[in-house]
Length: 360
Picture (cartoon, helix red, strand yellow):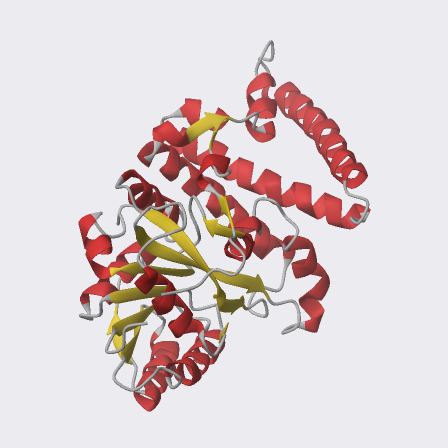
């Protein structure tokens, strides 16, 4: 591994000050473990309310981190953070990844310096491993334990543990070589939602440019849960992810596939032969109840380790995501996308982890 490297950890944030302070404390410990001659900047790009911003700024000053006032959109914040440093390696971390492994930065840099993957493709970026914390808020244990099993929410966090190369990953734990980041055009800033979709988009542009997205299972970050305490907050998050799905569809139409969206199906099918609004509502509610019950029962019977409450919550998460797709597709005037979905699991782009992998 080459010494004398320069990395930067870039954290976009807004409010949730207690979680952000924990993240910064964890990063302070992590960056102290880098070898002599190497350098790691910590850059916070924030648009918190004044009282919370003041506390975050004070913490940044205490640990020697840079504080930048940024815009609302997360994609823009990530780019602003990248512009604020001359680092060769850019590590993007979400502010709610509040516990980072001691070797977090080293793991990202080591993997980026390897240069190539086992498939022979040039390595342009690295996905780190994220684990959902279910122990930092005992009251939330059941809620987040169920969320962690949701297909729409959890899998991408675990992929770096199982694969040597992945198709895409969350930008909550993602690193890129500076020259690759610049060559593919940075994060696209005109997303449809404040956060969501920009990570899928940059990963697709990375792949299209011929670079591989490798993984670093030991670049481990733990995702906080204490700041989200209710079912409605998680469902709102999934609805927003669904909306950002339409952004991905517009940006990457060649990666779309047909999706029998239950929300779209019910709302559209209910219009057939119905002229009165009251009749339409009754028909839609009846169909939704039957679909919901069938979907829940199927999920429950298919997974013997899942109880009925967990199955019901899993369906709710998936339907909130699909409702977001339906809403945003109509809002954007592209109703065809109400029945499409990004091809998240294109297995041709996932390569199993090679045991005994040696990093350069």
